[in-house]
View 1 (tube, rainbow, N blue to C red):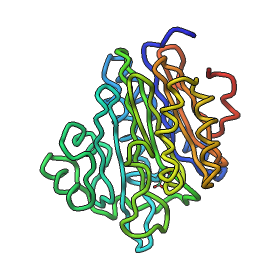
View 2 (tube, protein in one colour; view 1 turned 30 degrees about the vertical axis):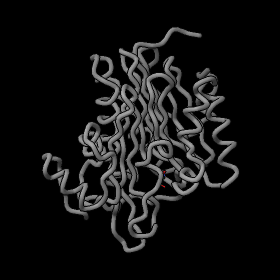
View 3 (cartoon, rainbow, N blue to C red; view 1 turned 180 degrees about the horizontal axis):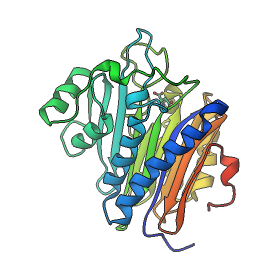
View 4 (cartoon, protein in one colour; view 1 turned 90 degrees about the vertical axis):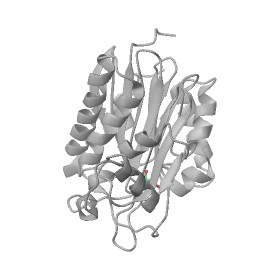
Length: 291
Ligand code: ASP
């Protein structure tokens, strides 16, 4: 087993079909997000801080269906979900069906050490206001620039110099979905999980399928004995039972990175203390670098 790098990080911009004219934007956006996290990790900051900063970059970029680029639901309104998990103590903070939060991931982080794990709708927005988070007009979040096809969520997993692991997700959900629908993204064990003793994972895909298979939980369980790529292959096999496309990113406790997808594309960027930042939109572009 190679020595654990001082730190490592991987981000994704959603499991989907990315039309040719948008591919460069997806790569660039993921590179900017991974650079934000890498700067913090190299300075000795925590995995939680790194994950939040990477997801904030993706939320601010209308290329991605999260924060500012969110897709409308069946009523033409935007509802966002986000979560962050701290693998040190299994703390989770999550928000769902929020309409006025500029950075849902930051409100999720504020919730990390509060008693409720998940706040939805007005409750989350009131909490955000009370804690000085950035509130915005719902129109600011609605995607008016890019066509989103299929699934699309952003996520990040990081391990810091102390070996602490964190995972995060943020999404505008599925285009045209039912009002009030909440997907896998804010649910630990479904859209994300992090445990310093095992690893961290963040998922994108059809939320209903990821929830039914508790795919993040299965992936974490497999990481107890398998290397990242083998664990991912096993999890994707489970998904076949219910169907639906997905994209998965993983870092294990040894700092090994893995990722894969069943969607046509999955924009990803990765970096570590031992490797420069690189971006991909298909797994085939990154063959051979993982355990
Ligand atoms: N998983 C997200 C959801 O179902 C969508 C996605 O990943 O694109 O809300």
